[in-house]
Length: 132
Image (cartoon, rainbow, N blue to C red; front, side):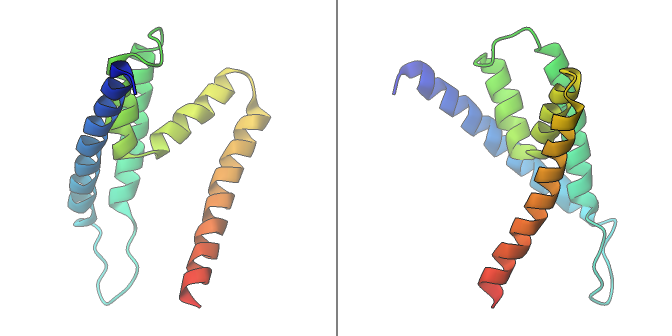
């Protein structure tokens, strides 16, 4: 492993640790506002807040860093590390936006459908395989 690879891994890892702690903190705080009583399911306010805030942040940062190379240390630390640890939903949003920006609406719709429907189906499958 070269020193530049090691630096990249350290930047992503440090950013990811920070983003994960930030996600946990914000999610815990937000979920306090939507706690259900009596065992009823509650709306996942914390996860929604994290996903939406992550999408706003990745849009702002992607716009600011658009002309920097993908291995730029700032991009690795913030976009891949912090936002990757905070929420990967922001990456999903940015990738979908990129497809729309490239005038590929069918590909964008396919990506959204495959991610959401496929993700839910695989959660169901995983749950079924372990709870039987």
